[in-house]
Each structure stands twice: as structure tokens, then as C-alpha cells.
Length: 214
Length: 371
Image 1: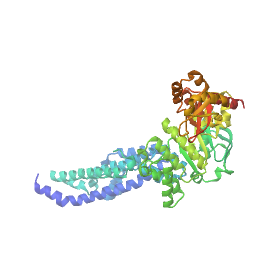
Image 2: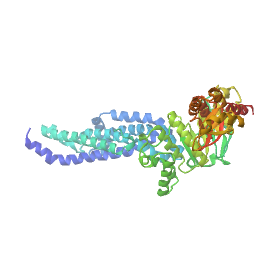
Image 3: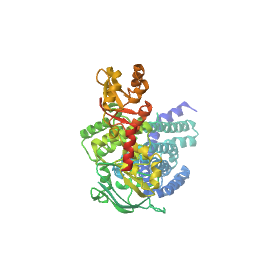
Image 4: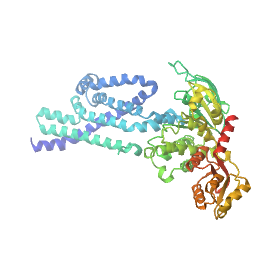
């Protein structure tokens, strides 16, 4: 261990790696939300409920494939770089969000929905003004789970040239420089904890005061 | 007026229809109670009026218009709907909950705010304390008040209430019933009220429809149903205390007899003579201010003779033996038993205007039974 290596990893290498990693996580989670939340809403509608189980099973299967295998599998199709990495990470992040969106929407009390529709609120209004606001804390908790996954599995993306904190870890392994490893893994862990806490706080803030468990 | 014409609701996979060939006219401006044992189809009927459930066959008309001609959301916006589970939106404040339907009608903000405040006060809730609260911060009774206020927000001519007070404690339930009846005198809505409690039906209903197994068994005023139960089912549903239940329909003034004789307290020693002259059994005593403060009967006079101390004690025992003209028979009977007396004074406000007796109550009920 040398202080010089450590300093170099932390101040010369890490900023760029961290930025790349944040981009990787940010883009992946944004796309995952854009796919998963509408999918969850769709699958929670009475008409399409029957497809819910099948979809969840498929997503479960996708998530069960180890991240490194997904990355290896996408390589021949999408080549190197950020794009295949994002696709691979998406596989891992869809399930928790879809699952929680469905659970959150189906968990809205039927009494509330009955009263809302009995007052003449349209199905669309009920979805946007009643169901989603009531389900949002649970949806966010799915997003939180997915985010933490993506931060950690994202380090593997370095294997196909997507950069990020994985570069430091791989570099450390290849060059026998434990300082690099330490900085890469440490920052990854910190990032996961930070995002987890941040979304957790958001969950709390967004839960209407009348429903908060104090 | 709401008219149901040969409504049938058949759920798939069930041998018997939930509602079978039902025709019923619900008069305007009255409370019509649908009552019956669980599973008799009463809630299904209610929910077919605002199309929460569509009938298998038959027509529901409101003021002559087939409800299927109106868009379901539009139809429901114009009908107040209260359910047992209340269903307040937990993420909205009380004010926002009450404002839901006015918002659907796109009322201007100021008008909504005014109406919400008016309703909160009308339902007997503390305006400042309640407005910004969330449903979870209220008691069951308070929540149902908000539920009723929400249903009345745009002053719809029709309200559907599905066991609205079924989930609140008995004391709050009595309060809510009394308040709804008081309000109804002013607002005169057409209310269809579902309950499984015959006592609630008798108390709330201008008319009662009794159902069993999807069929209408009897329809009539509470008095008609209690006097002439059409068959054994209705008799059993009402219970063995049928006539006692009927007492709830009458008020003290129904069996009121004139006050025969009033005696100033100072004339107590001469009461026997005065009463004999007037030919009455009971006389009310007036205190110095001329206010009735009790009564004596001829049997009291026989018992005590000239023992003024004993007589005064007897009078003292009756100093609270008064009812109002609107006091229902059961309360009057309870007082007769409580003070162990044969007569009660009937007050109109503060003023004595008549008497009611065991005998009078008995006669009145008997006459009504025989009619």
C-alpha cells in the first residue's frame, strides 16, 4: 500500500470514474422507471391482471441471470461501451420497480376506489389522483432497491468498456494495486448508501402527512 | 322520483338471481329504507341506481329518464353516495375530500371553499380544527360526518346511503341518525338508505321496503309494516316486540289529554275539594311563578288525607315528571316507570299544555292496532 497510489486513485482517477458511474446509474434507472411504472400500471388494471404473473416470472428469470453473464451475453450483439452495459443493467432493474408498482396499486383500499368511482371520478382521474399518489411510496421503494442493484452491478460494466468505478477495481486487480480497488469499491459502496438514503428521504417526504407512520 | 322497473340481477355462476323482477317507486323528497337480512340483494339494488352495478334486465329511471342514457361518471356526480366503509381519500385533507365533487364540476375555488366551510359547520364539526386534518386523525363518527358532507357537497337531489352508520359506535350512530333526520327536514332529499337493522329502518324511513332473497316482501310506511306484517317472514324480521317498536312512531302529543285542573301550591290543603269540583283525577301544582312543579292524584289525597308533609313529598317526587310534545312514547313510558306515576305533564317549551297517562298510551296504541 502506498499513499501515493491511493492519492492518485482518489484524486486523478476517481472523479471521472464517479461521473461515468453516475451517468450509467442515472440513465439506466430513468429508462427503467419509464418502462416499469407504465408496465406496472398496465398490469394492475383489472383487464390485464392475468398477464401480471407471467410478466413477473419473465422479469424474475431475467434478474436471476448473474449480471456478469448478462454483460457477456450482450457483448456479441451490442458490442462494447455504455449501450450494452445499460441494456444489461436494465435487465436487473426492471423487476423490483414493476413488482412494487403492481403491489402498490393493488394495495390501494378498494373502499377508497369504490367511493371515488361512486362520486363520479373517471378511471383516469382515479388512477392519477388516487391510486398513484397512494402507491408512490411503495413504487419509490422499488426504485430504491433497483438503484442500489445498479450501482453495485454497474461496476461490472467496466468489463465491456463502459467505464465507471469498475475501471478502478479492474485496474487494481490487474496491476496488483489494492489502493485502486479500495477507492473503487469504497466509492461504489458510498454511492449506494447515499442514493439509498436519498430516495428513502424522498419516500418519506412524498408520503402524505395523513399516511405517514411516525 | 326513482323508479325501478322489473329489475333483475343475475350473477354468473349463481343459481338464484341476486335481485329478482323487482319493481319499486321511491317517492321524491323522502327517505326510503331498503332493509333485509344479509345477502337479500338490498345493496345490489342501491348500486344499480348509480350504475355501480348494471342490471341483467329491467330499467332504472330517475325522473322519467333511463339512467343508462347518462354517462356513468356524469350520473354519479349528480347522486350523493355514502358507504359504510366511508372511503375518504387518506392522502387528502378533510376540506379536499369534501371538495372532490365540486372540483369535478369545476366550481370556482372561492365557491368551493365557502361550500366546504358551510358543510363542515352543518355536520357539527369544528371548522378550524377539522379543515386541514387528514382522515386518519378523525374518529369513526367524525369520518362518517365527513362522508355525508362529501356526498352533499353539490347539493344533489338524490342520496344513496349504504349502511352509512353501520361501522360507528352506538352513541355516535344515534347522533348521526338524529342529525340526518333533522337535516332532512330542511333539505328534503330523496334518500335511499340501506340497512339490515329494522330499528334503524323504523326510525329513519318515511317508507320501508323489506327484502328477502332478492324479492320485495313488503313495502309501506313504518306504521303499516308494524301494524300489518304481510307474512311470517316480516313478522319474524320485526321481532316479537312488534308493538313496542311501534311506540317509536308516536309522540307524547298523540295521546295528549287536556289538563283538567291546576292548583297553586298555597292551595294544597284545599286541593281535594278543588279536584272534586272539577271532577278530575289529577291536578298540577303551580309554584309562585305560576310554573307547573308537579302533580297530585286523587289516590294520593286518599292516601295522605290532611298529612300536608306527606303530600308535599309526593308532589316533590313528580317535579321532573314532564315530557315535551315531541317526546316519543318509549321515553315517556320510561319516565312513567322511573317516577312510579300514572301521569306525566306535557310541556310545549316551558308551558304546560296537557297530560299523558299509561291509560292514554294504551288506548292510543290499541286504537292504532285496530284501525
